Length: 171
Ligand SMILES: CC(C)(COP(=O)(O)OP(=O)(O)OC[C@H]1O[C@@H](n2cnc3c(N)ncnc32)[C@H](O)[C@@H]1OP(=O)(O)O)[C@@H](O)C(=O)NCCC(=O)NCCS
Image 1 (cartoon, rainbow, N blue to C red):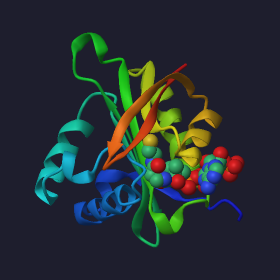
Image 2 (image 1 turned 60 degrees about the vertical axis):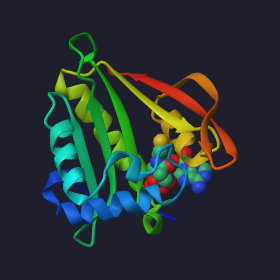
Image 3 (image 1 turned 90 degrees about the horizontal axis):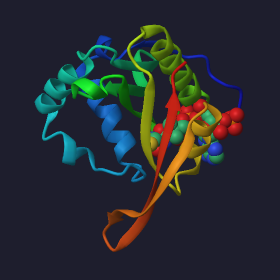
């Protein structure tokens, strides 16, 4: 399938309801380490926490727009401790109906480009489930390296999954 060239916008340009619906869809894939409900109790909680993390110096929060709605997101959230503010955690997801069209690559490339231009972030980390091959391949192709495999890091019901800690230095 030819890559779709999305319009990439700031996440907060979209209605919070639409962004929350996107996150709900992404987390429903079951490949994320956490459930959405572990992190956000409700829409208002989501709005409040997103506002807090995206206001941090160096934070990046982007969405790919398709038909006026956010179809994928990427967030790069700097850590808060004074000696860790040059480091950040990356999270991303594409709506299930829009995967495999190049949106993930476009969003990730743009987030890394902005991180390099922002002058704040020097290291980006992420955690991904080892069996999430689309995500692992995308991250490796964008220059992330595998730092460690965390065996049995994720427990979903009776099933265990390894996690992979990945890192990319920002030039
Ligand atoms: C992982 C994810 C973000 C990829 O986004 P996407 O828009 O589907 O990916 P793209 O179409 O931009 O593809 C970019 C690269 O990802 C990899 N990839 C994407 N889909 C893949 C698949 N089904 N199998 C293998 N590799 C795949 C490939 O390396 C691909 O590059 P290529 O087309 O040159 O081969 C998306 O599938 C997703 O949201 N998954 C669920 C949520 C998730 O896992 N988030 C990450 C948690 S850490």
